[in-house]
Length: 378
Image 1: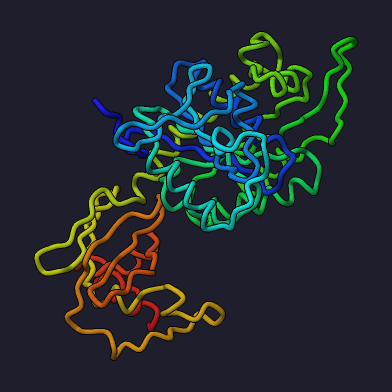
Image 2 (image 1 turned 60 degrees about the vertical axis):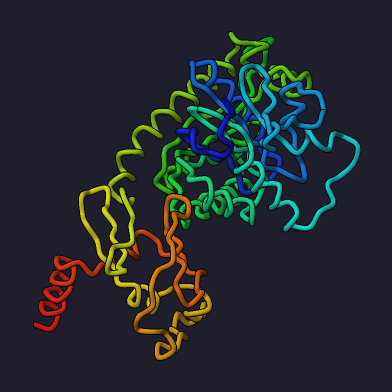
């Protein structure tokens, strides 16, 4: 039986990001994946850093063209029980990837939709540095269960990590927590601890932004050796302090995902359908049954073609929207919005779940808004 490509059989997709490079994000991603696998989960790892892939080296994978099925589905490579794909498996170490963004994004789309991941408990995505196209595409198309933010303790790394954290918040991706990497160094000879890059920055960032602090990962010779040899620390030095830190990190991430599921379920649509009258019917996780007329949604579109991005003023000419406009189709965008294709060809608006609840035209919501306006006038 052929494995169905894409993420349909993946229970949880977790992004590991930082705001900048050099903070050990890829090291955290690969060891988190191994730690989750160590705990009995089925795990995949997607190296989304197209221009600077590092996972093949960290997992000791030989550079070779990824296999495909007769149907054209990419078959992930498996190392230490973790399935993974990476641009590094295709390009090797023979030269840089000199591509413009559209070509790189095409590969990301392939990795998301055309890889036979199969049934996984977790797919860990190792993001490139920054807050650009890759991060936004993944947030919109991969239905992320959450994001883990990696930083080192010093102020400059914390400042950039905060920008990455806020980017995920803007697209309604749950923040599972902050990891402080390179958090102190214990001398293997005398045991004396030295805060090479400072201390406490990751915890402070978590406190200021109101997200969990998942813990610190110490500097360790075992980590360096694992990255260079292609044998992750949980495999090569399973009894080391840093290996234990990653096992604890995996437990914290699993706990945060479980806790976050209940919180987000009520805020997300349980079912979406276009009714016989052409109205959009949404049953929300908290049991609320919403209703939206196509015309009302179209004239409330928040996209840059309909609303001036600087002033927030609507620029859409409502007189040009047909009163009998209908909805052609509707689809989810990540875990935070719906994309709607209207019969007039317009399809660029993203309707955030929060906005949809505010626009709801069901009898109860209309009555509540009238009541609120009346109370304000009094």
